[in-house]
Image (cartoon, rainbow, N blue to C red; front, side, top):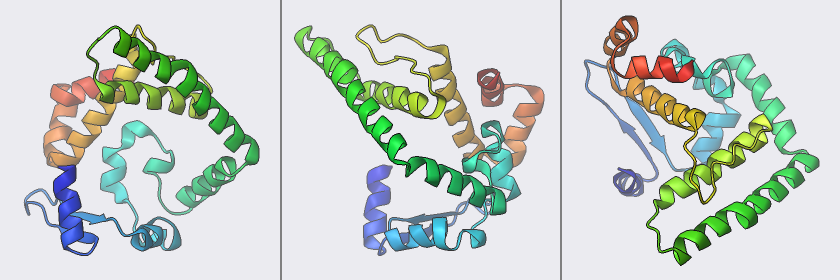
Length: 195
């Protein structure tokens, strides 16, 4: 899928519009052009609102920056920008990530190499990313990346939520709403993961 999208973006100059089936209104706009991304996400964000349908789809994420529009999005973006551009935060992030590389990632990769254990690298780097994200955003390090590869319920919950939100974007709205109302299928799993 990613290779196909990359080829299409190259073929059509870096920006494409995809019209989905008319019956579900699933239209997409893809761009790999940095100027377009800056224009849409920063310079002229008010013209590219998510709208009520997307906010409803992403409702399990709450009212954070991912799910907000207008003035609330602008406020949250400024707050995030001021935090992330703070020298102390940058130093903390750099040190924290470096420590996780030295104390977790490299030892795990060494262990599986020496032990000749087959490992899913996507899972390894997903755990590395999860630990870094939790550490920086929540101030809590779940330590999911270790030679034991622990099963963490909240890490699995994040995966279920992510998958559920993707399905909400793909399925017709009436379909996932019926599933939510009946508490069946992916909507049942999504509700359980959110709880």
